[in-house]
Structures are given as structure tokens and as C-alpha cells.
Image (cartoon, rainbow, N blue to C red; front, side, top):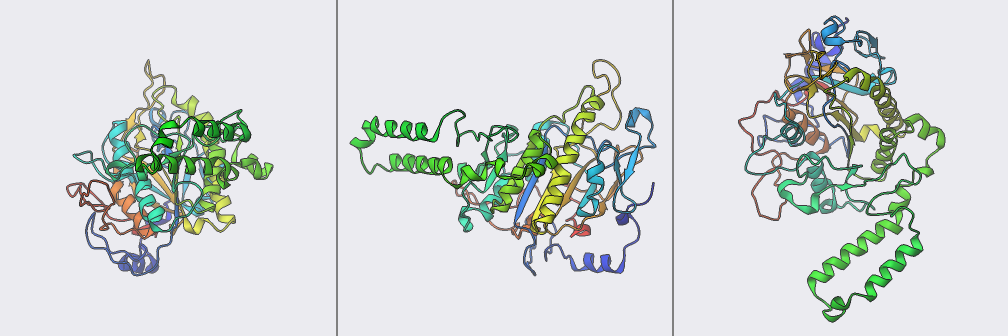
Length: 440
């Protein structure tokens, strides 16, 4: 296999970049350490493609065709990308033609094999402890949302389409920063957003229901000015504004050209990618796509033959669409799961060709928002079992994202309990490899 561009000797340009720590102008030595902003942030929004269950690195962006059948199974072929020296799984031909837009991290690691702990760690940069820390999405919603001039028609942190249930995304910051989970299925016409639009109920009937509810509110009429009731009324007003205002149009994918919807793929994931583009286009700073189906303990390869083409189509079209609209320069696309899958295939019953959880070494992908595409960070060993070069820990990746977004890791996190906690404080005993200066 050819050597990826980033694994050889540093060019003069790369050396200067590393020497200047040009990560959006950050100087950084770990969570809560020195932070210096020397140029404006490059990113305004994040689309997080959360590979729920953990995708196999060997069967996506870190193939090992020479490792043998017990590691590759039937996926023993790779394809070149549009960047010399970078190869990926043969079932990702569309993403192969977009490799100049993304960077692959092949040396992610944390060593945790439990879904809940790994999900929390990858999305907060913290190991579980006394406090439940907020996810990256909640932090971004705090620093790019209502408290900082956000006036969007939907909340600043949106999840397509359901919450993971692994941990509280808002953590100790509280309800104000929880994500808005749409529910429903954007592949259906219309996209019925749970809590905004009731399937089969007309606008006229919805408004009549609200009017009747108001008529029956004897307690509210008897206690005008009660602050608790006023808070309830404000919440109702906001909900109905979502139901009948601009948000309803925002979630209407029929407004998109049919051929573009076809390009994304007429499936839930593909249409979620299109919806994510619509959301960031209107100014939503953080969108998560919770993409189920990657916890492949059994019959892994049969599942991958269905899932990989679906992912390839939706994700490649998202990158291309963002680029064509001039949005990729300001939108980070972050692809990752909580861990990878075991490099060695479990052929025996009851797994029948499955892969188990694997946190020692896995892959992540970053694009847009100041990320330099066409690069590879780190490397795994010959069988993808251990990190061979440049370990990258969750806190390294998260710190990189915050730098691109202009979020100070030493800024205090808002919370109703008055806790003195900073964006990346805590976890000083964690391992870290340093910010991803190679790709910014």
C-alpha cells in the first residue's frame, strides 16, 4: 500500500504550521491550560454523524487487506481515493471521491469497551466521575446559542432523530441545553417531527385543541400572574410557534429538489443528512445524526453489505452539497462512534462472523470548518489492533473542535447549581496526545 501523505517527512509548510500551532490560533497544553486566540475561529456549526454502536475501522477508513481472512473476512479489497496514497474500503466508492475534503484519524484510542462509558468519554472528553459533564453539542449550544445571540426558529442543538439514552447530553448544565430530538422519519412525506407536528392532525384541529384547552384552564384563570403558570404559557407559545411558524417549513423536505433527495438516498440516514444541511444552512450551530445499526456482534459482514452503501451515499452527498453551497468551510462534519469493532472476526457460534466492542484503536473522520482534507493522522498496526503512531484521545479531538469554533477551554460552563467548572476542566489525569495540529 502507498504511504498516506501525512505519514512521511514533514514539508516546510507543515513544519511551520506545527511550529505556529495554527489550530485557529490556539496554544494548548491540555484541558484547562493556556489558551490564546490569535485569529478568528473558522467554524460556525458542527454536524456530528454518531455511528451508534461503534463502526469497524477495518471495514471503513482503515482497511488491512494483508491481515488475512480472520481479520478482513470477505472485505479484502481496498480502493484508491482521489488523494494519492489514501485507500479505504471498497464499499465506499463515493466517499473515495471526496477524500480531498476530509481527514482520517486512524489512531483514536481510549481502551473502554462498554457502550455507556465510551459514549460519554468520546462526547465529553471526560471519564465518568462525580459530575455528569455536558456533551460537545450542549457546550456548543451554550456558547453559540441563545446566550450569544442565536435567533433560529428551532433550538440550537438538534438531534436527528432520537436521543441515544446513554447519558444526559446536557449534564450538570441543565435542561436549557438539552438537545431537541425530532423523532419521526425524514424519509417519510411529510417529515412528522414529534412534538411539533402531529401525524394526521390538521393545523385547524390543532389550534381548536389549544383553544379548548385554554377554555378548560380554570386554575390559570383563577390565579393570573402566577410565575409558574406564566412559564408554562411561554413554553406553550414557543411550541405552537414551532408547529405553525417557520420551523414547519424548515422540516419540510419536499421543498428540496427530488433529484437531490435521490442523491442523498431515499432512506432515513440519507434524508437525515439532507435535513442536517438544511438546519446548519439556517444557522443551527449543532446537529447530531444518531445513526443506528453498527453494533454488529453477529453476522457483521452481511449487515455491512447493506449499511456501507447507505452511509457512503448519504455522507458523500452531504460533503459535496455543503461544499457546493459554500457551507463546508464553516461547518465541521465529525464522523465517529464510541469505539471500533474487534479486528479479529468472531467466526464461531453464536457470533457467526461478528465483531465485538473495541476501544484500543479505532477511526474517526473530520471535514470542513478549517480541517485540512486529504490527510491521515496516526496509524494502527498491521492488523488494526493497537495504535502504532500518534495516539489521539477523545479530549484531543474535542479540544480541536472547540478551537475551530472559538470556544475557550477555560471559559466557565453555565449551570443552575453555581458550579465553578470550565469547558475542559477536570480529567487532568487522562492521557492525551495533543491537539490535531496536523490537519488545521
